[in-house]
Image (cartoon, rainbow, N blue to C red; front, side, top):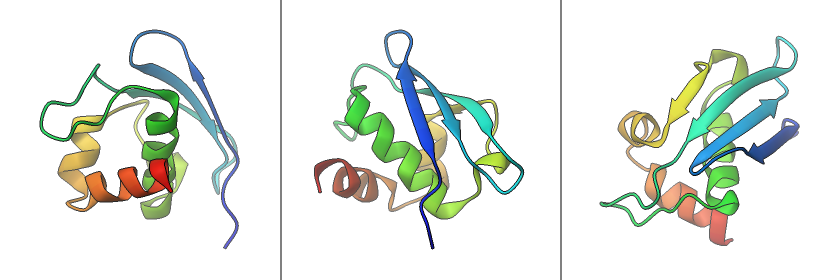
Length: 91
């Protein structure tokens, strides 16, 4: 399986504009990361943002994502998210 095309651009503190390919064509959404996620230690740096998007796209198509994705929703939806994000970011 090939990885979808993903482009991420930071456009504010903890806010990233994401464009990703999907089965339905190009999709845009915004990823929101807090300065420091208190319980996980995940920050709002570009490497973490890329890792969050990569994790999301292993679980679902970009066309199925809402217009704004917050890290808390990702952590609630996927119990293994923190470990997966760290592995993708640091690996």
